[in-house]
Image (cartoon, rainbow, N blue to C red):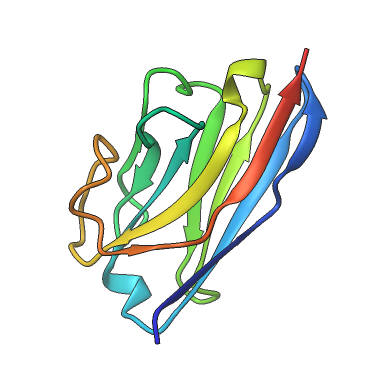
Length: 125
């Protein structure tokens, strides 16, 4: 059974930091490209960052470039997203996603095979 379980969300003030984690099981994690998406009510799910299966190729949306860092541990089967400094516009539900291909880009949600349930990030001004 495939599972992606996110954690690390919370409420912080602008300028603060959070580190999201996503623990994977039930599929070939080390061969899968991984990504983070986010969504606010009434809007489409937005790609935030992705990372290739071997961790060599990260990709970032322009809105988070220079502030967020995506990383992965293939032994622990865990994906991370370090976020700093946070802005109020980063407020959203954050989702972990997996693509069975080795390389992917978080341009759009379609094409990703597995999804977590999400963790809420709220940034106050």
